[in-house]
Length: 222
Image (cartoon, rainbow, N blue to C red; front, top):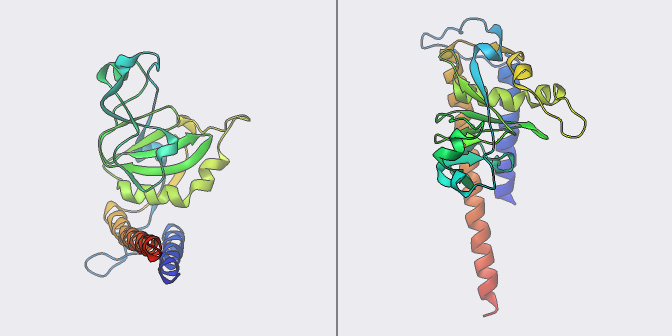
């Protein structure tokens, strides 16, 4: 219970920190101890390129089981993704609307389940349930990842469609974002990453404790 409480407190700290940072109640200072310059209001199309995904023909075996990672929205369960459940081949890539996304791309679910987000730790592709974001030189990907986490409701609000709500590339491009200088973005990203790392560590400790508990209970009556 104590371990769960620690995780809960860290997650509360993360949510509160995001809220304070993106409402500019918490600001960071440069190496000289001065606050960074004011944030600029811009649109997402000015800070990242937005790329859709696709699915190769599932009836053609030569399009599958290659060496290209291919993610679906149900796989977005943590902040970082490495290996996908299924992979596609070069032929599958060429014969579909799937696109290669570089390492560090932000995978954003935009159909049915909207606003789930992860950073790709390897080069990959996705199906059509995503619009993925590749940051430009004026933007830090970890900063933008946390900004999306904080503004998930803004994405959901813009979704259209009655059966399967969806947000289009053009809708995402027009979303407004207050953008700090790159230096402040990096400070924000590092600060939030340090909290995230603590959460991951504490969750790993909890998993180990629960495994030990199961082992002890299993051997209690042997």
